[in-house]
Amino acid sequence: MNLPNTADIVIIGGGVMGASAAYHLAQRGLKNIVLLEKESFFGQGATGRCAGGVRYQFSTEINVKLSIESLPMLERFKEEIGQDISYKQCGYLLVAINEKDAKVFKHNVELQNKLGVPTQLLTGDEVCKRLPLMKFDDALAGTFNPKDGIVDPNSVVMGYVSAAQKMGVKAFTGAEVIGVTVSGNQVEEVQTTLGGIKTRMILNAAGPWSSQIGKMAGVNLPVLPLRRQMFTTSPLKELPADFPFVIDFAKSLYFHREGEGLLIGMSNQDEQPGIDQNVDEDFELVNLEAAIERMPLVEKAQRASHWAGLYEVTPDAHPIFGNTNVNGFTVCTGFSGHGFMHGPISGKLMSEFILDGKYSSLDVSMLDLKRFEEGRLIQEYNVV
Image (tube, rainbow, N blue to C red; front, side, top):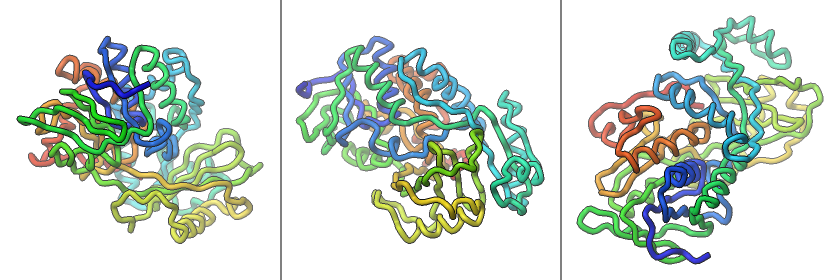
C-alpha cells in the first residue's frame, strides 16, 4: 500500500493513543484516516515498553475519572474489538512507609470512594499480612483496589489497529515524520520518510516524541521524555497466583507477576530527560538490591529479560488534550507514565473533539495546552 497524497486527518504515533483515536474516528464514520508509526511495528515505542499496569488509584478527580471510563473499555475489549488482551485483575497494592504518603493515601482513598471506586485503606499490619513474601515492617499504610491489574499492551494496540484497518484506516509503519508544513497558521502537509501527505488536520499522539513533532509545526509542548527501565525474573514457584501489583511508593519500586516470575522496576530519581532507551546497567543493580531488600525471594531468581522505555512527562503529570496555537494541529500526549491505561478513552475523547468540537464522554477541557501559561496546573501525586 502506497502512502496517499491527501488525508482528512494524519495521526502521528502508532501506540495506544494513535491506534485508539484512529479506531474511534473510523467508528464515527470519518474517511481517509492515515496512521503513521516510525518503528517497524505498531506499539513498539512507549506503549510496547511499559509495564502494562492499569489502575483506578490516582490522586486527582480527573485522573480517577479517566480510569473509570477507560478500564471498563479494556474489560469489554475482546467483546467489542475481537482481541484477547489478557486482562488480569490482580489488584494494585500501594504501600506507604512515611507519614506524608500515609496521609495522602487516606485522602486519595476518600476521593476514589466518593467517585465510586472501591479502593480499600489498609494498616501497616494488614499490608504485611497480605504480602508474607515481602519485608514491609516499616509499612504505615496501604491502599488496595482488586479491579486494578495488568493488560498486554501489544494486544491492545494491534486490536485497535486491525479493527481500524477493517474500517478503511490506512496504517503505515516505518513512516517517520520529518516535517510539518504550516501556512497562514494552518496545517497544510506532513512530510515523512515515505513521502508527503496534504492534510488540514493532524493529531500528534507521538508520546515521548510529541514535543519534537510539535516543534516541526511551531508548537511548543512542555513534554519531556524520561527513561524508565525494568527487568523480569526466571520462575519463582513460591509466588502465589493472586500476587498483586505491589508499589513501594517512597522508593518508586514495583513488582508484579510476569508469567511464573516477576516484573520489577524502579524510577531513577536522578534520570535526566532524553530519548535513550538503553538499559542503565549500574542503575539496574541499584534496582535489584532494593528489590531483594523488599523481597528476599528475588535473590534466588535469575534475570530473564530487561528493557527501557520512555515516560512522556508534563510539569503537572497530567496529559494534554485538544487544540494548539496552530489551526488543525491537535494533541493527545503527556500522560506521564499512565498513558497506556487511559489510551482507550483518550482516543475516543479526541474523536469527539475533532468531529464535534467538544468532549462528550468526559469533560477534559481543563487539560488543555493553555493551562501551562495560565497557571492552571493540576498536580498528580500517584506517579511512579
